[in-house]
Length: 130
Image (cartoon, rainbow, N blue to C red; front, side, top):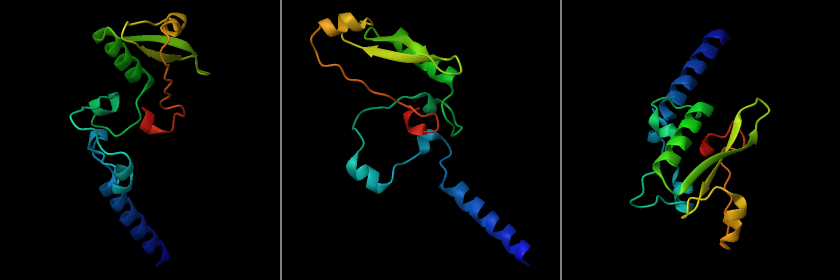
């Protein structure tokens, strides 16, 4: 009898989990508590590799690289480079965004403007940054 209840509970839990999960990353909706602190930005479309696939999964290294290269190709202000390699030997990308399209830190510093440093998906198991 215990085995039967264990199977039933597992089935119910799996069904509940499947209902809570969005079909695609773009279907995900923040909770009311999060939206109260971070409301949606009107008239702004957010683009990310996660929104280009129907599978709710983390963005792969290759998908991220392709996305960043396309961003740099399509924008005069964006430049992509590598700040080194990971322990697995993969490039660690850095994106420079300046009105002048600069990618040299010394040249950017000489502009005399504030520099903003943003890090996304610092830890590979945190999908929000991907």
